[in-house]
Picture 1: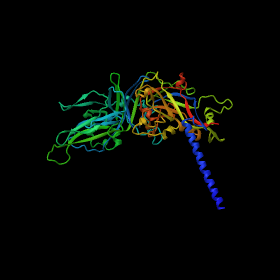
Picture 2: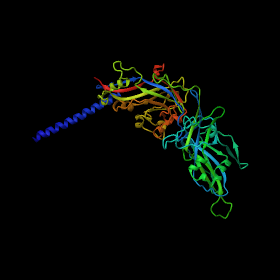
Picture 3: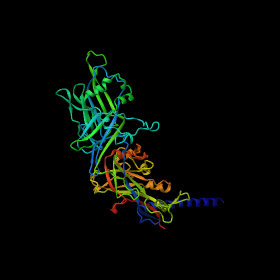
Picture 4: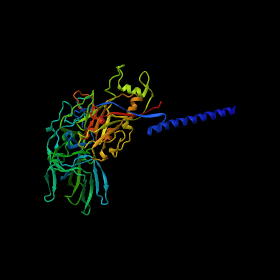
Length: 561
């Protein structure tokens, strides 16, 4: 009896091992079949293309507050035309109820706003080489700076309780509330430069030169010798007329306007940064206005507060004004021709994508084909789904007939219409749910190098000869997980949106921005699309060039029966 029981255990164990081996062979066969279908005997790898509908949607004014940064300048696009960007910002103070002291004299007032970028190298003499990745063009531009008389609200008085106020790219707070330019352009603030011969500040022109050189600030050590006190990243750094700031800030010591932020925001409503071309040219800047060192600093001298043998002894102090908490960008488009809405029924031959207050593309997967003649309730999506999975009477997933290996959308650039400067990245998203696709969240991110972030899902622009300045060829966007969700998780076949993107990482941390629509519909677009001025033109589903037509391409495994 014991021998029989032991023999039975041996048999069961052998059967289990055999089963594991069989399973392992199945997995190995499937894996090798994916890599090389000549080796496979049980499965075939197949790829099919499915028609989709793609069409352009021109954007109405877009929400531009709460971006975390600001754009400023002029961008000329051979395809679309010119975009000019300006912004208005509230100011915050470094302290409240400040005692500036006695005998105050302002030494200088400095405005500084850094670009985005990185430090490339530091040599043995501590000279720093920077790389800026937030400047389009190297032509000078004119910057006009005004005290703004417009009060930027925190909350929408016409919305629900604690609804935040949205501000839009066309200088408006809503379709019925516009912001007049004359309100933004209060007192104009002049730029100055220190004259060593006279010891005075002389007015200078307000032209900003674009450079990758940082700023090296120097002072005197205890022995009166010059020394480096600070190194600043490349950006805008100018000196402002001191008289205005003495009257506006220093002379208000003891006044309630400096007691708290609410009083101060009402008293000093903000600054308006207005960009203008120089000789009909300019550059487009992305400024890190949210950085701690992005500010206006008042450097002043006062009588020493402590008791000394010298009655006229002085000391230096600073008063810092930061940008925010509310900042709003304004965009003025001077396009070569208006961007027209496409055809949502048949799709377009070309897709026009433009950042800022520009345009996006909409994508309908499995739509647009004729209904099944025998069943008018059936459509292309259901037909496709039935080829891949078996469902129950309620339409719920039961089992797979085919296994999805990879699914891609490939968009070709129309090189006849785009003359360089195409965006390196596009962003694909769920329009209905205002969110990235599942593929975005499972792909690897890279915070230090956004250009390499989400690289598999949102493939970068492939260029001729892989040269950084080569003509753009195509974008390959992998949506494998999204397609799997449609099949096995019964996800809704929603419309997708396609937009240009400056930094795809922003979509992981910032909510999408509203679009100001005539019918107050809840329509939003990606934040990273608003920030970039770039645009491109892609072949759509109705292009006359069949080799450039956009398809949904799916690679799948099915039994070889």
